[in-house]
Length: 124
Length: 109
Image (tube, rainbow over all chains, first blue to last red; front, side):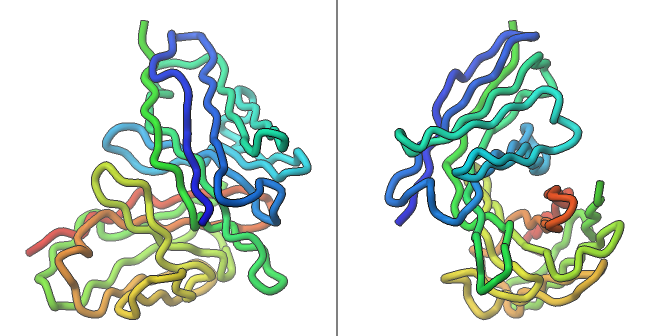
């Protein structure tokens, strides 16, 4: 079965760039699914960051769009997140997730598979 | 942006009883609504998508209903493992934004 694993630095300095990678195993990133990043500040709710398709098409949360880049590397079966100009407000657990994809002819952008999450702290 | 509002913030229910959680969208999302369960230290788990379709492996005691702007998640007979935080999520395809509710904490009464 498909599994996702996030990796990257757990500590980022203010004004720096947060960079994370999500490795996809047990399946292909070139399937009909979209791949997302979701974050959760400590003790708070979930926030969608953005998504990517294997073609490279992306959609971003408008509130983060100016600072976010999501990319895909099909050769490595992984996708990545870059978030620039980070502040303490970007401290969170970052999850990668896969959407359900097509159910019949309908695209279901609900997340059926999640990584375990990785904690990123923004601090000097 | 479509704002999702969940109520109540905290729900106290006894094991074996029914729990009813609500989610309201600031504008119609048709049936593009999912529910998740999250336990401490774990990633969310998909329960329901399409407002009423159970995800793979989800017990029948979980059911979802609603369309448009008003949605409900019902857990028919609470088991000890059901006490957790529940989130709703809308996924309208245009604009392609995804937003979550703030969560409902389901606690043991």
